[in-house]
Image (cartoon, helix red, strand yellow):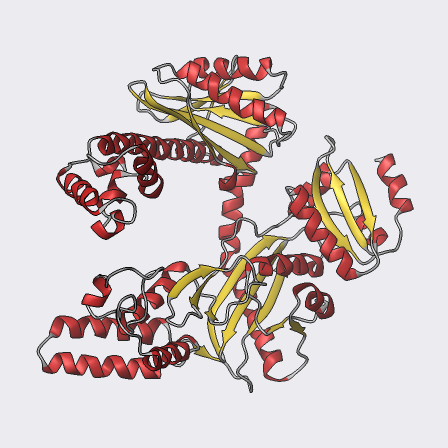
Length: 592
């Protein structure tokens, strides 16, 4: 602490970034400040609660970097967080980007769902964001059903099924009426911009025509489409004097949490909203600025973003390269107030659920740390094995950080030798994993859990010790009813209360690694079976076999393929042989 006090006295009153470190020298938090001395010193003054208190308890040292301006400190902070990935920083890396609908700019356009990863790439007709990929696909399917635009990625040599059922004009072989294509394009653009009247009138007319012909099934299908547009795609109108695309951001802070709301307004309509509640560690302004900067990393930017007056609009405008405004009065100011009120409602409604979730994750993780006498327990890696009578031998590893799944850290292992030897399998996967950790200087876990008893524990422990590493290995013991009831080390047993949060955490871990490994095992078995099937079809050699395996991966997916798809890889007669063979082949789809 004396060392920290000395460094605090030397801090300058300049903008910059600070990097908090734990006793092992690992960076656990990165923040920015207008005045480094004031901000960093505040962590070591007064009483803190929640996640801030947990952070402060782990700080053993810090570093800082001064810059010339606030925008420079924001850019540096974002880059440092991406580089070091500190445990206490809130990042959007696990959040999925929103889907958009793109109407391609080709002479004969296509509709497709895209997730925008490069906002600098120019896309003329891009609409969204949509609440989820299902909503976006439903809209694309609706428009493809109503308009005979191009459905295929590349022009084929003959008209496909869509041409024969009237959903394509056969652009691959027929003369194109570009005026009709352009009319369709403009109608689709009107719909995607929020004007649904043209298409709803079109559907009502078709319903009437089919009803008069007593074609009630077709009329009912169209009625369902009309209901979808009326209920799902009719959005709340907002009062603005212009018609530009904008996002409105609001926040509410209470009880150590920050609630963030973002409303997407397109064509004077609220098309969707985004809601997030995060633990508050930094000052509200810094936390919110960081969150917004990360949020728009994989998003197409609107023409304008409205934000509350706690933020620095100039810094955000310069960083995001779009118009960020703080409205002081009028309709836009009311919009920001409305979004802030929604943020408050979201926090009040979800606060008890958040606290309950923390008890099941962070508190249970802390209970496990204390039970095992560990100094810290940030990262747990859990292993499981699967095989079929010694064949298709695989292992899976899942990772929990602070009691929560870290799915991007999961790993699959195909074991080199097929044999019914769980201990040897465990030795191989543990060696491969932690040799790689040493070789590539990856983050080491604080705890390894194997799904088994003493034999599995000792097998893993031998390998860890042979690599010169000091990581505790534990196992989970099941009772006669195959339910977890004990936590084992190499020389101790701990009874776990089946009603405790710790029990539910361990059970979640066990279920997660088991399901992850079994799913991988099924994929391997299915791929192995598929490989054997392809050997039975005349005309499929190693090269074609490899292409088919790469494209379809499982028997089930290949059985669903049409002959035309198979002909993209195989000659026509070979494709027909394979199609017929698969049709007659009986396979347990539970193995897919």
